[in-house]
Image 1 (cartoon, rainbow, N blue to C red):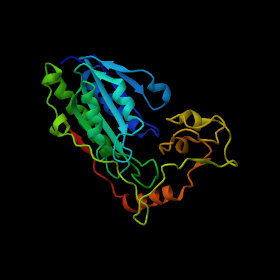
Image 2: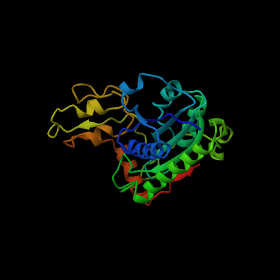
Image 3: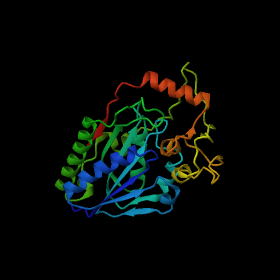
Image 4: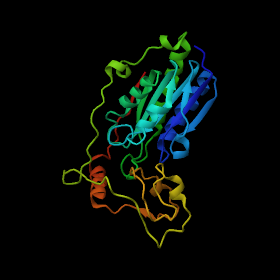
Length: 277
């Protein structure tokens, strides 16, 4: 079938998901000989416009896994903004080396609900946003080869079809087979539930230079212009922590830190990726 463009739509506070999406889409565009358009919906400014895709568009949705699901503050926006007129669609999720749980199924459900036909999907382990020790070095060369392989096989499916309706849908990503479970419950080192919903990042005044990078990089627009106060909703994405050039941002909530230590103790062994084609 004829494809005019690939649209890479991604939410990526710390950059890992953007990297996976761009790698997949670049290879897919190369194989299909079509341009790739990047649509970054990480910041509030990128989430102000709805998107509609025609039969000759190929949207690719890429998001990180938060608590085993699509980030809950992003999900309503995706359901509202994503509209497709029978377009073939690919869904990609990243996860911080623990598990992707229901995130891929939920993202596929969003795509189907928006009118797309989900023809391929994948879940890829990346470095956990909370710790460099969890998912360290991911994606590896082997991981990248799998992303490229998924793009190649997706291109072959599309090239072999006359129309989107003829492209075979992976059994696991058909609407009737999608199973979306509850959110993952984070645990502390002692096995008890880690209650850190209200935790917010602090600032070390001796390190902070007042550059405002954290304010500009917050996906929720939650950080006040004074840099110190965080009056908005914090989704613990670590964008401000990772982006701060002075290393001045940090979390001191003990439940959160205990959860990080639990992850570092139990989830450093490389997790498996999954692809559906």
